[in-house]
Image (cartoon, rainbow, N blue to C red; front, side, top):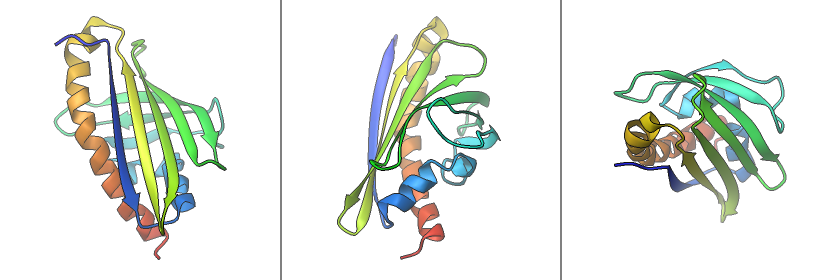
Length: 157
């Protein structure tokens, strides 16, 4: 299968305040706590703001590892929105756009993440892209479940 791009979306209700969920999502150092595909945070900014970058070591199950570089595009602490672009640190021009939104849902928080992948090279279009599309659908939902547990441990109700 050849693809130039793919898109995904996942949501979850979390038994926590929207602010607590947003604080966890934007705490770069804690990403490996709730995202099993992230093995380690290699570099992180001293302050998270538009243009800030961080590096992580990705290592999804049954896949080789790689270093990913992400850059903040939007950080709106009032509207609880966070968006960034991530790329492989090897210089491949393919990239993903990630967008997180957290909203109040009764006494819980509703977190929604969307991702848009843009595949620029043949290896990404023919092999890596189709494989990652399938993996991300599962990985992201598992991460949201783990995030709910992590935020509850930090902010019990």
